[in-house]
Image (spheres, rainbow, N blue to C red):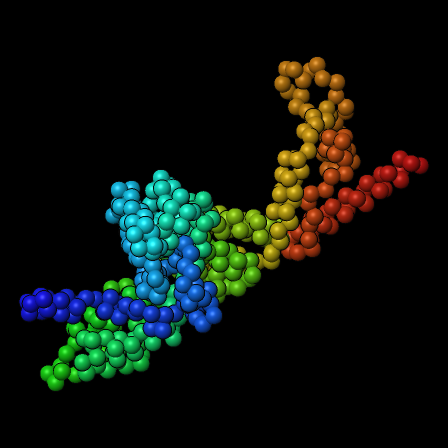
Length: 445
């Protein structure tokens, strides 16, 4: 190797992003994910035993999926091959499978095939991998930011471990900042001071993404340098080194559903602040405000129901209003609606009643409507012998008669609770029973 080649390699090393320069090669230097790689945890045990099985590493960006795959490879006796599902096709997969076969044949060595963004492979590409995972030709490690149970073929995922990596915690990100200043071959030669508040801002804006944190840190450092070579990083410099807070919310991923679920459960639990927090999170991350309003409408019917019949009216008004106004002012309307729904008395009797009835209808015979209830206006109805229908208005608004088919007399689906307006419904139904008893006594006499 001549001096020019050595110089070229040195320059390439220096020009690498900080995140690449700091990429650890062993578990001892790996930051975060202690639930998987900590002492005695499953991936740690796999590495120590040199028994690696096919796996999916699933989690948000910048939490160590690719790094962990390299560490697993470096810590075992296996060969390592890599593909990106974004740029690869069947031809590329075939080439890697052939390399794996050759490694087994000539060196008696298994091969780890790491596939980044594996969810980007289509069904046929994923199916092609299946037999080679099954017979052990390759140890497949797939990385994905999407829920693999939705994005990876069931047959393939059933033959793999699924490990969920979490967004890095504050202590992990603080550790990364310190490691950067002390161990990075470029930064450790520089006189750098970062104020504590600036570190907190950096952590807040990175949102658990180590790559975002390190990129912003590097921009901040290299954009500041005084005449004495000393670099001081304050909160304002960090803010100016980040375009926008990194978000792990994705309208097309399971985090979208997790967030709306937390939003609904917060309203159901009458926690106003939590409900407003999740509302703000969805709005800030570009969620469709009509989607939010539709879920509020459903919530009003499912979780409030007749405890407060006005809830669904207000929820519908919110939906119509945001359609007329749009953002940013629509956020105020949504907030008003969320606060109202969250603080309403809750009752799911309507929800339980229709589900119970639907289940009954699906699983039982369909009998004819009683003759007295049939429509008398259509032509064929004139040939039907009908029982006499008693018109309730002729009896003061209520008269006892059977409305269900004879075989289903006495069925009960709706069970009101003594909450809000539903108390009045219970009183109304009790009055009807009293009237039935009085009329029954009269008839018996």
